[in-house]
Structure formats: C-alpha cells, structure tokens
Length: 301
Image (cartoon, rainbow, N blue to C red):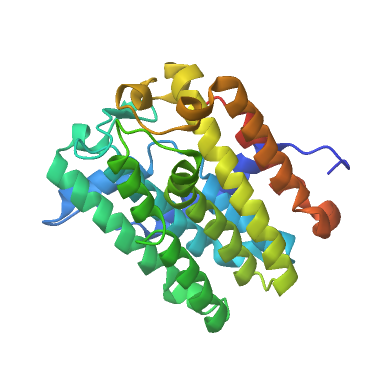
C-alpha cells in the first residue's frame, strides 16, 4: 500500500465479500415448513447493502492489532441486526417505505407478518452468530461477552428501539436540537459506535484505545445520520434505491427541518472531522477508518 493513498473501494469490496461469505455459509437453508420466512430474511440480507457496520467492526479490530479474520462471524451478526432493523423500519406501522436498496421492501415482496417474523429471525440469528462454537473457540470468552453486551445494549430500549420510538412520537411535532440529537444518538449512532467498539474489544484494545474509538464511532454515527437526513432531500432516488422526501412528507424531526440545509452540511462536516481527529493516537494504521469517515460524508446513497 502506498503511504497516504488508500483504495477504499477495493477495501470495502474485499471486506464486504468476506462478510458475505460468512453470511452465506451460516445462513439457514431455505427448506422445510419454515422456508417462507427464511427466504424473506435472506431476501433482505442479500439485497445489496454496503456492509459498513460489520466492516467497521473488522477495521477497529485490526487497528488495535487484532486478527480481524477471527471475528468475521461476529461482524456478520452485526449485519443481521442492521438488516432486521431496516425490515421493521420499512413496515407500514413504522416509516411505511415500499422500497429499500432499489428493491421492494420485505413486507412488499412478501407480506407484513412475514416481514415482522423475518426481522425477528435475523435478530435471533445475530446472537446465534455471536455465540457460535466456530467463533467461541477463536476469541477470549470474557471479551466476547463484553462485545455482546455492548451490541445488545445499543439495539435495545436504551438504544435503537428507544430512538425509533421517539422518532415516531415526534412526527408532525415541533422539536428542538436536544431531542433531535437524542433520537439520532439512539436510533443510529449507538449501533455504529458499538460496531466499532465490539471489534476493538475482540481485538484486545486497551482502555485508552477504546475511549478514542468510542469518540470516533459516536462522531461517525452522527455524521452518517445527518448525511442520511440530507440525502432524503438532496439525494438521487435511483442511487438511493428508495423514495426521497419521505421524511418531509411524514414531518419527521431531522437536521434539515431544524437547521436548514447549509447548516446541516456544516454539521455533517464537523462531526466527520471530529471522528477523524479521534484516531490520532493510532498513527498510520487508521487509513481504512479515516477513509470510511470521508466516504460517509460524501456518499450519495
């Protein structure tokens, strides 16, 4: 690798492919009486995601000197959780989105009940991956337990579920910066931060390294969600793979609705810069994490 030059596209493709291989290898076979719901889960899981969260897990493991190849099952579990959240997010009782990644949402391709169960199944499958014998024999049990705890807290009542609830409750209501930040912190940021931290923990990170990576993950998560808010207004539907202006139509509390587009762009840049700055203690090994932060800021889908 040439110093200061990093091929993020190849990196994401290579790491993403490794995650895909694990997902394909360990995903239940589409057979038997439960075939329909397994097919629905597989449909959404392999609908073409960027695999950013599992790749962040692998990259943070590597940056602290860990062997990322040993934790692929854990990273794949994170992708199962992310996909489950998207299936439920798209449901008519939630955000009511008919398309995801350019394809009909799970409840449109199948039906609502099947989509709910497919999401439930993917969440359970994630913990099956986290505790799989093939992973358990490769990592320290205490570190694995700590990583699982961090992920489970990030997606529960004190994280993603709580954030989604308040996001729904605030539709059509006048909000303020404090509650907006709380929604984004819990709905999106917590899982991104936990993806980073879990990989670092499994890689043997020290306390100081975890603190720096927590700051990186948190700031990256905010940048990600703020850009997401912007793309709902400024994005290209073909590239996004879903309808634009859905947040506007639902009168959701977002950064553009509260601060306007230009200020929101500034905030996205500020959070990205803070994320990159948090990586200073790691020296030159941070090219993948830095490049991912820049990718998040300038992404178009």
